[in-house]
Image 1 (cartoon, rainbow, N blue to C red):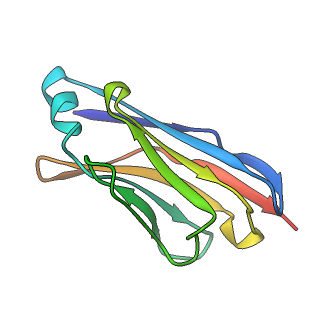
Image 2 (tube, rainbow, N blue to C red):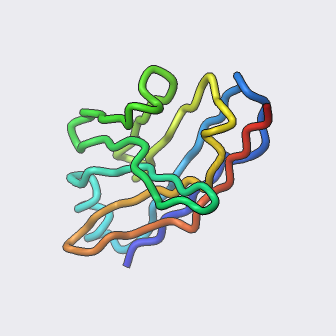
Length: 120
């Protein structure tokens, strides 16, 4: 089993910044495997489907949704089994619950989510 806990969400005005964190815990075996896994951030706004925000490979290669390119930065700390999302120039349309995801051994592990609300 793997447990993911997100933090760092909150209420911010448009143009502001937030930094989300996702910390993983679990068996030593799974934590060692996680260092080779791609980790990702997704978000789900009210009434909408969950969508990909960004992913980062074990080698540090990052990919972003077009809607966040140039504003969000994903990073990871393999030693801490953590992934981060720095969000700058936030817009009201970024309002959503943000989830981190780790696919591991054929199973997708999700965190409980953290709410990000951007006021105009």
